[in-house]
Amino acid sequence: MPRPVREAGRRALEGMVPWETTTRDFFEPGERLRTAFGALIGGDPDGVAFVPSVSYGVGVAARNLTVGPGRTVMILDEEFPSDVYPFRAKLAAEGGEFVVVPRPREVSWTDAVIAGIDERTAVVVVPQVHWTDGRAVDLTAVGAAARAVGAALVIDVSQSLGAAPLDLSVVRPDFLVAAGYKWLMGPYSFGYLWAAEHRREGAGIEQTWIGRKGSDDFNRLVDYTDELRAGARRYDSGEWSNFTLLPMAAAAIDLVSAWGPERVAATLEPLTARVEEGARRLGLEPVAAEHRLSHIVGIRFPHGEPSGLRERLATARVFVSLRANAVRVSPYLYNDAADVDRLLEVLGEVLK
Image (cartoon, rainbow, N blue to C red):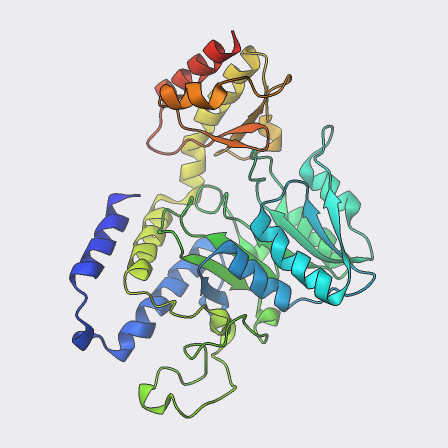
């Protein structure tokens, strides 16, 4: 976790004096963060909601989209469970079925997804990069194909936002969801939902007091109302104005915005290219540059994962993620070419 984010948390903890907390402290820091996050993604602050997890955000999207008998929800093969379970529950309750796009071998994820969209498609749920190996999806192209048949687009950008450029004015999703603790460098349990303008009249998945219209007037909280706050604020989770996590999240968004996702991507591209080149020399199967973004490269083993791979990597203090039969290599700004070479050295030793 970056030092400015840790320091924001420390200051928040040291400065917590309950009798000095005002009504403004529940709302104003969040409004500033909505503005900052909206600017990062090319969206407006009224579309931003705060959620504790990706599954929560996808749950909000699922609640406010229509599927039903004879309609389908499209997901990728081996998609992360947070994107699957909310829609699985919806389909079980309301009808409809999943269409699972098989992992393509000869074409891109983008081509495979677009080929599977048809008049039955109600919702397309896709990431910007697949969580197991970093294979990319062209969200703009998929979004256009979804809109052509009247389908909604839900994007989970947890594995890319902050390290890859994204412009919602071009992608035009119905809902975006992102974990805040990955490439956004924030604390765990604080994430983001963005809803398109035509998706801001729905209902959240909690019955919170803070999501009600007029909740900023503490003297009138017992004037119970069914009216909700404006925009996507109605989708905020309860206790989103966490006095420790929110300042940390804000510091993280400020930091990532100052660096710029474009600059982060440009910095990481030579490292993942080095990983790809070295993995090919070892006879492995890395995801080719044309099928991925700059910050993640997955490596698969033609003959299966070697015995002892995880232990050998850990012993050598080489830290990568092993996900669904792939080694996911995700360098960051603190890594350099020597780190990549050490990874390749250990992989070579394991393969002997």
